[in-house]
Image (tube, rainbow, N blue to C red; front, side, top):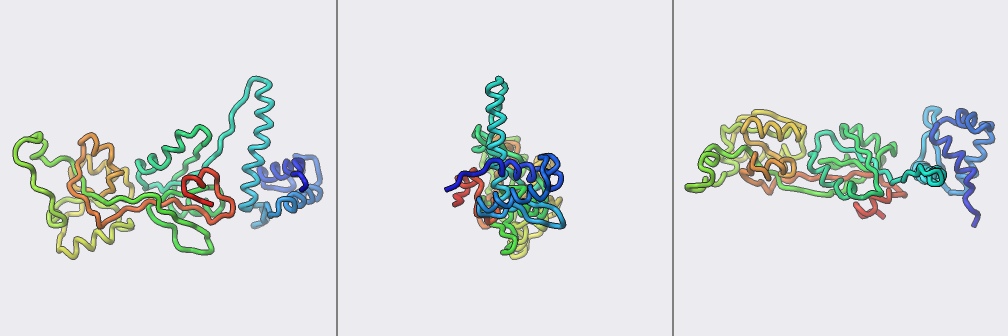
Length: 301
């Protein structure tokens, strides 16, 4: 079996970073035709196309991105060798590019990322955006995984794969009721919150109508004939948490969103609603070459 030609690999590496054959040829002091031949020989050796042309631009294929990640490591290792001999060595870590829906609970994100933050061999690049923006970046192979509280649309041509990584019952939370704050736990116990009856005419903060859990919650209230006073609809969990703290109104949230407030007593759980579940997903592409970090976390082949 023939060895990999690292001369060809370096040519590919320069083209991949410049995304332009002519500019790469100028940097390498070779003709564009000679560079094309070298790239074709590398593709034949690897058994995969590394580039495809879109609107006269060179775009890396999935195999091309895998090859570029390894080429970056290889040529970085060369720099590290020089640095080690000069006393200026730096370590290269695996990079995991994570996209997170902007409205997703920060506490959930932190919990999911915590094992990686403790791994000195992994570097995280975290970006936020709308689901549409992040899925587009995932399709373009500029992200490795997207964290979301909704599964990606079922689109076989897109190749998105949604894996549920956590789920949690929703709860109604609020600041401690006045009688509990004054009594400091003495005297008769406060009556249990009755759901949904006790929501009638009560100020309420809810996730926006576009939330995955909102239709089921609205149906429960409608069937019971309960009409709360809708104080606010919020699509940002961080803002929903702040409103619950500042207004004293009841708020519908997954407890993970307000875990710090529940722990400190700033907010209390008035009741859990097991029939309402918030689900959290890690969305990846259906790929032949799974990211090595994600293999262990998501059980990818």
